[in-house]
Each structure stands twice: as C-alpha cells, then as structure tokens.
Amino acid sequence: MDSLITAAALALARGDPLGALKRVALRDDAAALALRGIAMAQLGDLVRAKTLLRRAARAFGPKEAMARARCVVAEAEIALVSRDLAWPTKALEAAQATLDAHGDRINAAHARTLEIRRLLLIGRLDEAERRLSDLDPTPLPPALKAAHELVVAGIAMRRLRMKAARTALARAARAARVADIPALSAEVESALRAMKAPAARLIGRGEERVVRLEDVEALLASKQKLVVDACRYVVRGAGTVVSLATRPVLFALARALGEAWPGDVSRATLIARAFGGKRADASHRARLRVEIGRLRTMLRSLAGVSATTEGFELVARHAREIVVLAPPVDEAHAALLAFLADGESWSSSALAIALGASARTVQRALDQLAAAGKVQSFGRGRARRWMTPPVPAFPTILLLPGPLPND
Image 1 (cartoon, rainbow, N blue to C red):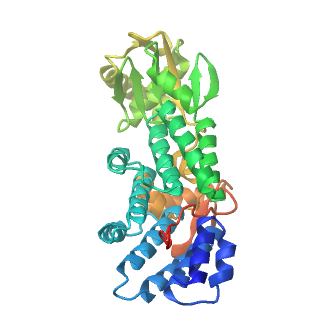
Image 2 (cartoon, one colour; image 1 turned 120 degrees about the vertical axis):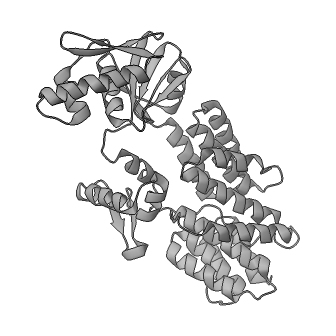
Image 3 (cartoon, helix red, strand yellow; image 1 turned 45 degrees about the vertical axis):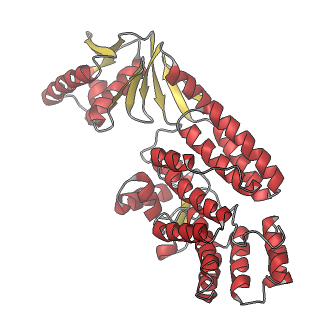
C-alpha cells in the first residue's frame, strides 16, 4: 500500500470516513475504489458503496484474489445492513474460503460472523448457534470481538437467556470502547436498549401490563403459572409446551379463555373470537362444541375446559394461575412491524424471506400499513425499501483493508 491508501485505511479503522475520503476521493485505482466504497457505506450511501466495491473487485487483477474476496465480504455486510437477504450467500462462502486459504484469518472470521448474523436475522437460531460455536473470538481484533459478542447476545436474547445476554453485551461494550468506533458503540447501546424495552404484554385477572425480556424469562420458568403464549402460539406449563401454531381456531379459543380466567367466556364471545361470526346461530354453536372438544384433547395434560351456564372456562391442572403473554401491540401485521422496528430499511423480498411468507402477501401488508401511516418507503422498483424511522442506518464494521503493514 502507498502512504495515502494506508492513511485512508487507518482513518476507516478509526471510524472516520470523511478523513479517508479526503485522501482517496479523486483516485480510481482498485484499492482506492474499495476504500471509497467502505467510506460511503459508513456515511450511509449504501447504493454508491455497493457500486464502488463492485468496481474495485473488477479492478483487482487475477492474482489479487484476496483483495477481491475482501470486496465481496464488504458488499455482503452492506447487503446485510440494507436487509438484502436475497444476496447470494454462496459468494460470501467462496470469499471466506479464499481468505482462509490466503491466511487472512481476520476477514475470514468477519465473513463467518456476517453469515451467522444473517441466520440470526431470519430466525435460524440452531444453525446460527452451531456455526458460532466453531468460531474462536480470542484472536480477533476489538471491533470483531464486539461484533461476535453482539451475535452471542442476540442468540441469548432470542433464547430468553438474559444473564448470558447481559454478560455478552458487557463484553461487547468493552471491546467497542477499545475499538473506539462510535457506530459500533452505538450498536451495542441499541442492543442494550432493546433488552430493556417492553417486549410483550402480560394479561391476567382482568389486568394488563407490559413486561421486559427478563420478566418473560422468569414467567416461562415459573411452575406456578400456565401461560397462553400469543407470541409463539403455544400453551406452556410445568415444563410442557403444546403448540397450536397450526390450529388458529383452537389458539383463539385458548387465548380468550386465558384472558377471562378465573371467569368464564360466553359462547357468543367465543364464536366471535374464533370464527368471526357476529351472530351465533345453530351451526356456529355446533362447530364451537367440536372445537372445544379438540381443545380439551390438545390441552389435557395442562388444563381442562369446563362448561358453565354461560359458556366455558379454563381450569389449570397443576398451575395456580393462568395468564396470557401477548405481543406489545395487537396488530394484524405485528410480526412485520416487529422486523421493521429494528430501525433498518428492508426490501419486501427480504421481509418475505424473514417471515417465511410469499412476497405478494408481504407487499399487501406493507401497502396496508403504509396507508395507515405506520410504515414508509423510499426508492422505486427493486431499490424500494421500507422502514419506520426517517433515515436508514449504516454499516458498523467493514474490515476490507485488513492488517496494515507493520501491524
């Protein structure tokens, strides 16, 4: 590297993209294009950053496979931050293999971390956890250690292991301070706020209150409460979990009965909640009897469903109390809003991948939310992105330059 390239790389490592651009903004050689791409990414111009990195990858000669691989890794991080989940992951795997073969362990580890972050984002926790266990963070520089601990914390939070999540975030905060990259410290702070933010609503005995993740962890660990979990569509109690995710009618009945406990629910209310019928006729009442019988069978190890004069009531077999754990908001598209609540900009195709739904279904939901003023979009065609805050975020860690001479 010449002196300007070295100085620009050092500026980027400090989180100073403007300082880097002052040194390479007018240069079009491969290394300068790559550094300009990283700088633009850190400034938030992801489209321009992606273009520059692709130009850099083409500009590097056939003997510079490692430099091209670093460009691919940087582009993969931009794709992750811009929630382009359709970006070809095989290209990242090939880049990782190239970096490993050339001895660039740092950027190879960065590529693995990006792959794990993508798995975490789309909810493949088991695979993310398995791949994370194969990655040793000990030799990593502070910035990558912070990124590694953020992934550890993300998995722990989704597994409701809050002690492990707090420990990982404390390590991430220490590593971010050593790295001295403001954007990275901001990401750690964002994760801490998410851990302390209201995560759900607890409904019981006619009252409702918001709870944090640590409250949810304590609730699900309790043997004294039967939990109708409207976040995951299961009923939990005494170490037993009954999934009703594929039985929406049965879950609607279970939730209505759980919210009314220790009272009962009238047949008319149950019909309205489960079937959407405004008036209960003979066919509705007959169907209700059938579905209540099915619910009894599903919940027989946890609770009974008893008939009352007016309707039905839920009776726990072992727990002392029945509560309902509900999402923070009751919204037809609550899962979609939950993804958009991370502050990043998403494409509709990425949301479809993350939700496991069809692109058309997601697009219809986005149009409805936009009409209600709950989300907004920018860009057109394939570049169109959806979000809740007014401005998109930017990448936090891009290690394209790699170890500098004499490091």
